[in-house]
Amino acid sequence: MQLTLKNSKLIASMLLAATLSVSLNSCKKENSSTDSVTEADAAELTTSAVTASTGGFALQVNSSVTVYKTGTQICGTQKDSTITRSSVAGAIPAYNYSLKWNYLLNCSSGQFTAGFTGSSSYNGLRMSSNDNSTGSLVLQAAPSTYTLSTTYNRTGNQTSKIGRNYAFASTLGITSTNMVIDKATLLLMR
Image (cartoon, rainbow, N blue to C red; front, side):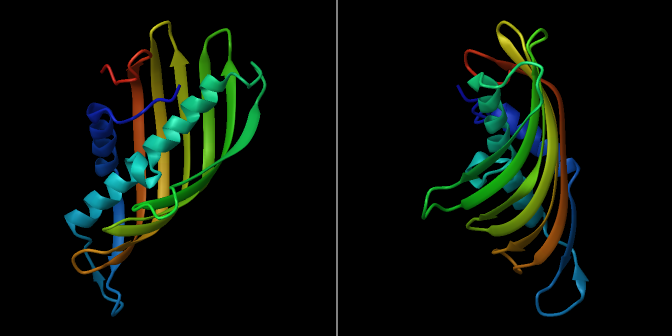
């Protein structure tokens, strides 16, 4: 079972958190003068960093829930793995990422903790990006829900394909605390 983060409340919450913590620096391609990145560029960066279709944070959370649900990990033993994902050939947006995970399942409490670090890239209609990311999550299982808390930090270089076609560097941080997800529907409850 995978946690599908198509729920609009969850994505909206992640986008709001990401928008509030995004930091951007830009420069024009043709000279070294510094200009401001447009709101459209910042919105595209934030949306692409979160949505599953670009290999964003939502897909990475899906991967962590999949690791939790496989049940192959040994309780109380720290495990390491690499999760590599990419879009199907010819897809737009196209993405790929490779994350090194370390994780631990405490079977007596039902708590799954994980940390990751890695790199990713995507090429969409309006922006392309190459990034490095780190993050952590705590997934607490209860009889009918999951409670999820996460941190996600991403630094990278983007090239806008709209407006003035800026190339810029970004730092993005997302933090969520105690998101409650229904196990049956996999939708955000609050």
